[in-house]
Each structure stands twice: as structure tokens, then as C-alpha cells.
Image 1 (cartoon, rainbow, N blue to C red):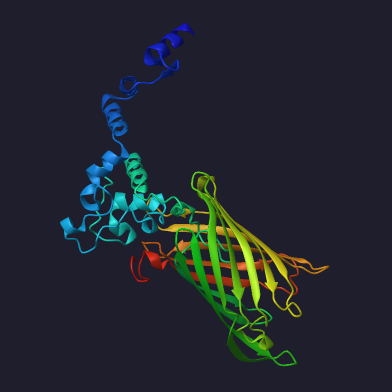
Image 2: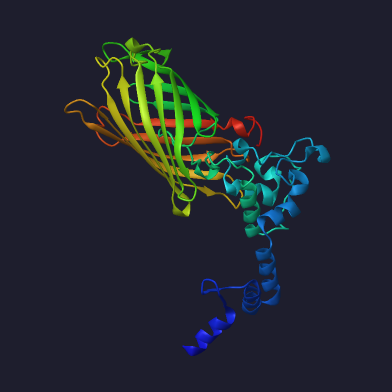
Length: 392
């Protein structure tokens, strides 16, 4: 239509060098003022004109410093502002948590009251611009972003490196009553690496030759150590890939069923993927390779997780229902593949969300006459974010 073409020509100018039509700032302003009410148009124009750097310097620099390192000497606060140039600090948390603290103030996540609330002074888009500018203070791109730190499943190892203490309890109430507790200590070092120490302890009810229950017995299980390294991470694609390995030593009493009786090495790959609509995916695949295979066979395992994250209210605690599909097969001729499904949920227990609870059940999908349902629960403490009793 000629009229439409003439209108586009008026609203655009041609770049002589490339022969391209481009929108000018004056034209954008005119369109906004014509499309919206004058007040709305001026507000949008103002937001477009303000860069993340300008907004940061206006709203944040007085406390956090123009260079992002903080200005504690001029403030006299009991708590020093964080250093945004420290990648170990600045990359760990997801953007939504930064925006929650900026909008509602430090107490919304159990932090200092000296962090004020800017929710009435800045818009969501302005918060996002400021956050994107703050992210530039960390110049080392080796550090995976906190958005890739997806919720931890009950069984599957995730790809993101952590500073955590996890206490897991596995309860079996069927033919062999048992309670297995596992303490997992995780220490991140460098941008991409993690060390791990696994300390298991188990109680089990014994039976006499006639099948009658007798006393409970207990023992340390097979202690393990592990290491993990991130080899690929890309926030734009929402993907993270790691490789790792764990070694379990025969410290348990294998005669009483509390250990394997041999050293076992478990190499694995772990992958995490952010999906649309706050869904996410985990995958782990690996091998269990015993040094002495006379009593313990080599085994392959693979684990997949589909989950979803949501919050109660705009800045409330996070819930994460998940479903794990677990497969394993001994690497001997004629061995059957074992399949389990593990429905579960994880929830943040406190405002800071660095203490979390997860619970679920590992349900056999085949060979149900010899494999039984196990109930699993864990409490997780991300100790990098503060003490266990902080932020409640």
C-alpha cells in the first residue's frame, strides 16, 4: 500500500555508507509519544536513555563504589558491602536473587538491613540493566554463572561445582530394615573445580537362620573421595557439562553387608540444561569399576532428571518438584537392566535459601520381588552463603 510505504520512509533515514534504513533516537521518541500517552512515552524514553552504568552510578555507587569494590571506609556500616569484582562471589547467585534483594532490601533474603529496598524507585527493566552492568565487574569468564546451579536431585550428581554440606538419609522398611546416613562435604576450588568427601554410616536389623529379626547392628560404610571439573558452560544456551570421578575405599564391614570389600572407581559425565518455562534437566552417566571383580561386577549407570522451579510469591522461597529415572546394568553376559523412578521435591527452608530440604522415594520399575522401595531425604547447607542458622 503506498500510504504505508510513505509512512515508513518518514520514520526512517537511510545510512549513506551502507544503504540501510535505521531508526534515529528522535524518531523513536516521536513514535513512543504518539503510541502511548505523553506520560508513558516520556517514562519509556527516560528508561531507554539510561544505561546500566548510569543507573548503577546513580543508585548503587555511593555504597558499592564506582568500581564495584565497595566503599566501607566512607560508610561506617557494621557489614562491608560485597566486592563485585570478586568472581568467586559475583557469579554464584542467579539474577533473580540479586533483583529480589535490590527490590525488597537485604532482609528479604536474610541479609543486612543496610541494603535498602529500591522497588518503588526503579522498574524491573532498570534492575535488569543494573545487574547486567554489575556482571561486567567480574572479567574472568571461566566462572560458571549461578543460573546454571540447578536444584540438586536425590541421586543424580549435578554438573555445577559447589560449597555444600549434604546429609542424606536412606530408609528401607521392607525385608531388610536399614537406615543409611551419608554426609557429603563439597569444597569448590578455582573457577571450575570441586573436591568431595563422602562419609557413610549404616544401621541394619539382622535376622537369624529362621528369618526372625534380631538386634540392630551398625558400621561405617565405604568412604569415598571425588573430584569434578566443569569443561563447558554457556549461559545463553543454558548448558553446563562436567566430568568427574569418585573412589570408594573398602572401609565398611563387607562380611556384615556394610561395604563392597574392594576399592571402586566411578568416573562419570554430568550435564545440566535450563529449559523454557522454568523447567530444567540433569543427566549423569558413568561406570563403577572395582579393583577386585571376583565379588563385585563392573557396572554402567545412567540417570536423567526433569524438574521445575517456582517461587511462592514474587520473592518467596523456591520449590522444585523433580522426577529421576535411574538405570544400571552389571557388565556381564545376560545381566538385566535395573530401572527405578524417583519422584521428589526440594524446598528452601529459610529466607536466604541456602538451607534446603529434599524428600522422595526410589521405586523399582522391574524385579520388584527382589528390589524394594527406598525413602530418601536430605538437608543441604550451602555454607558459602553463611552459617547454618543465618538468614532464617
